[in-house]
Image (cartoon, rainbow, N blue to C red; front, side, top):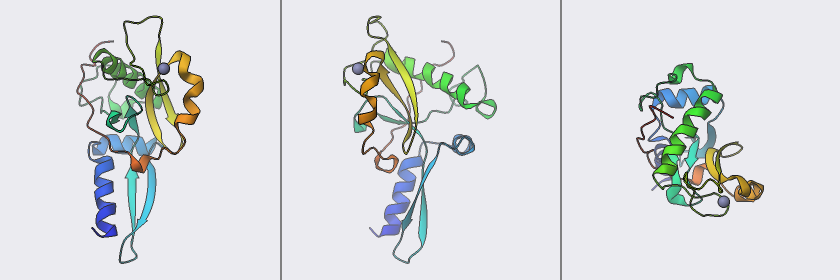
Length: 169
Ligand SMILES: [Zn+2]
């Protein structure tokens, strides 16, 4: 593959599950990261990395952002959402993901459960080089900073987000 084919493939891979409305909303809230990649002809290709959800520390745990409109989220339409509104939507989606047994703590790697009141978890928004929401036990928060060393948005391969029922809390 030429460099330009690699850039195109990377751009497609990073944003393939994020529709235009959601990408535009992310851009309005400064949540998208960009990289410039040069191709063979010396052209600069812009690669766009939308935020992701991290259901755990592994490569298979990366999800593209879900669009609340596509899931019938009843509280607010995406176009009317502030970042705080979207946080609430993501927390509801993550709660369903925990119910489904899909989630592991970013720090201790142990499974996260809703039926373990002595091991409460939180969904955390991180807005650094990598923009993401992730899941972590309350008691593991101190270890979070080191998990982000070397994590780069352009090296992740998101999978499509599950279509959870977000019609109620
Ligand atoms: Zn933990």
